[in-house]
Each structure stands twice: as C-alpha cells, then as structure tokens.
Image (cartoon, rainbow, N blue to C red; front, side, top):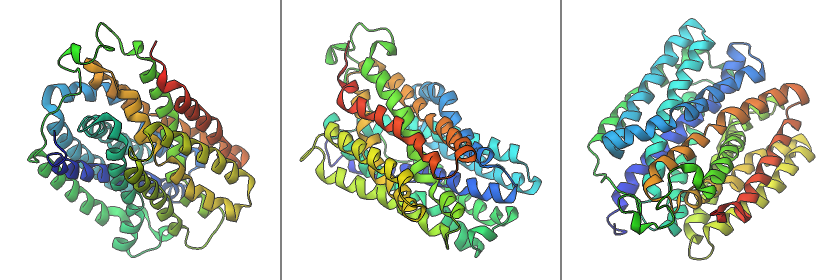
Length: 396
C-alpha cells in the first residue's frame, strides 16, 4: 500500500485512537470523583481503572476471533456502540449511587476498548513498512494523548462547576452528549474507506520463514517477552497519565485539574519527536532505550524530591513513556506470519497490566503514602529496559 493510499485510513484510525484516549481519560476523572462522592478509600477508587483494564485480559483473544469473522472495519464500528452502552450505564449508576454498577460500566467500556485496540493496533502496524511502524503509532499516540485531559475539561465546561463541586447527577448532560458522539462515530466507521489488510506471511508461509512450521505463540520468545514488557508498561503508563490529578488533590494544590493537561502534552511531545526522528535519525530500538533511561531517572525524582517538585515529575513522566508503546509493539509483532492476529491479541491482553498495577499503586498509597507509592514504577521500567537491550532479539 503506497504512502498516499494509506493517509486516509490513518486519518480514520487516528480518530479511533482519540476515542481510546478519551475513554482512558474518563477513568482518570472517575478515580478522585468517585472517591469524593462515594467516600471510597484510594484502593477502592482505583478499582475503576482495574475494572476497565481487566477486560483486556478477558476479551483480547475473543476480539481476535471477531476480527477474523467480520474484519477490521466492522470490528472497529462495533466497538463504538459498545462504548455508547458503557457510558449509558454511568447514568443509572449515579442515580442509584451504586459503585458496583460503576465498575460494571467501566468493565464494558474496557471491553469496547479491548475490541477497538485489537483492531487498530495491528492495522496501523502492518499498514506500512515495519521499521517505520513506531512513527505511525506515534502519530496515533498524539491523537490518543490529546484526548486524555479532555474529559475533565469537557465535564467542567458542560456542568460549569469545578471538579470538586461536581456531583453524581451532574454528569447526565455530558454523558448524553458523549453517547451521541460515539454512536455517530460507529456509523461513520462502518462506511469508512478502510481496506482489509494482511501482515507479511499471514497468507503465504514462504514470505515469513521464521514463523513457518511453528505451532504456538509461545514459540516466539521476542513476542512473549514483548507482551510482558507491554504488560508492565501499560500499568506504569496509567500511573503517569491518570494519577496526577489525585496526587495534586492530595497535596491540596490550587486548581488541581490544571495539572491533568501536562501528561497529555508530555506524551504528545515525545510522539512528535518519534514522528520526526524514527526511522530517519534513530531506530525504534534506540528510541525505546532512551525512554527507559528517562523513565528510571524520573521515577527516582518523583520519590526523592519535595512534593511540590514531585508533582511536576509525575506530570512529566509521560514524556519518558511516550515512545515505549510505539517501539515495543512492532518489535514484538515482527516475524509472526500467520500468527499475527493471535500475536496481536496477546499484546492487547498485555494491556491488562493497566488493571493490576494501578490497583497495587492504590494499595501502596494507603500503606506508605502518596509519594512513596511511586516506588512501584522503578522495577517495571528496569524490566522494559531489559527488553530494549536484550529481550527483543531473542529468537530461540
């Protein structure tokens, strides 16, 4: 597919990555929102994120079956209507003040997210040359990151209230608007000019000798280790993107919602660097190595600097995270041949790390305090560093 030919598909996929970012931003908004309105502990409030990302563990492989049966485009369209259902459930959850119903709505939203990401991640990866996949994913990442802070800003604009004054029933109007928009996007996607594409070796084994003769995903060490790296990455990325509001509120800083824009800007800045530099100036591997070093150093700064400085380190941690996902995905999915869809599902399942690690973070926050809870990031970034230097090369 020529570069001109896939510009239009990239535009549609960018819109879908924007939706993924918005849905993730909703999670970040609900953590302190429900903690305040339902009198939850920190560990309980982070169940919102856990419920959302648990869906990635449960539905990633069924999502690949859906793609095989109805194709990429129809799967993408289906996911938008699933999002609409999830957002609709938030309204009765507020009326009933039911935390359990909120968690169910978050789980359905996570299922929609799983189905959508199972389609759009491999699609954008195999849409062009594999050595520039990180560049394309970085473009998609900008669309994603720009949407992260939008829920807080959008809800404040519609309700005309600061975040600490927004009550449960105040969300009815913004949620109805969101439901209408995502349903419309589902219809638009159904008629979008998106071709069904195949990865190299997916139809003809001779095009991918490394995958020929293999019978299981577990015979691809670089994929399995990539899935592990992605699992811990998504967890710590969520901490970088979604906890700054909660952290700023805990420090009783004025206008804590203003801090929510900086993680998205940090991600966008890193993505822009990736778009400009990959693969022309640096490879995907080198970009990953640089980012892991930045993340390790910033993680130490978060726990070792004064809280008023530390909050900015949390806000800027997303910059270090920015090129990890775009680099890990193509490094892990390369050379899978006929296993490409199933391999993509394994990587999507790894996004379930977003369920476990924030939950552990919430428990640590109750145990050792807000700032010291960020120690959890350090070993996970060191694991990603191992993959950047050694893990991606293992082929036996």
